[in-house]
Length: 328
Image (cartoon, one colour):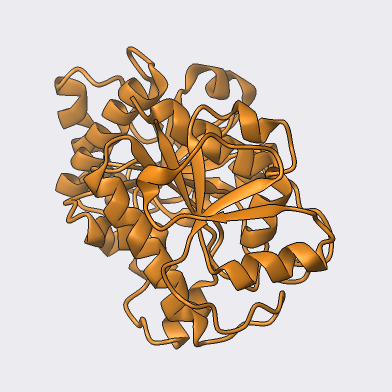
């Protein structure tokens, strides 16, 4: 049977709350895969008590013993101890807990092609300050652990899909991290991912320029002329349906949206504000170019509401649905 491993992320955030509330819904039984939470039982039980949710928790010592999902029952496997289950209260000691859970999920997804990884929101600063100085985000960590040459972060909703040429780096470093060879590979991965993960036969990819007005023929920057468009040309010669770079300020009009299967943005905050304005809480983060299937929510840890009220479950539902569908 298919398995969806859930690494809930920061224990002080709403990642735990999401899975607990989700297990009470009819959706839980409708997912055609066993959902297994990678978590400390004490954390799960204490958060359920705080949220006043009556749930059963079934510990697994072997993933092969997982059963079909039952409403009101959460199957879990414990990999590490959570140091402090208090919602909203960060603890640097839990950085190792978060990483150990994540690593286990990645390793199992590598070993078993019927296993996908779904990740909850993490607090990057807490992981870095907790001893993992090189940590930049889920996508970069998965790239490292799966020994992938190139990975692409794709955020997808029913209204729009956005991929990123660079991810979690300072804006001042974006230009030097965009190279012709890297862009060619990213476009190839995006093209292939849209075909295999979304069954789009000939996906239309719209590329955003780095500079205002896509450089305006080199008057406001030369990256489009020297790097981006030459990479696009190589991909077009391969038969990929990809546009030359266009100005980001007009790229999301209704006509262009209808013509585009996915946008390729040059940096994190170039297109994600548009996606989140259109689909916040309904989008899913998908990692392309790696050997595993990994999806995630499109939002953060929401420390201010953890353990206090029911969070929106739209994105976590989409993450589980997307992961299950992508498992062959």
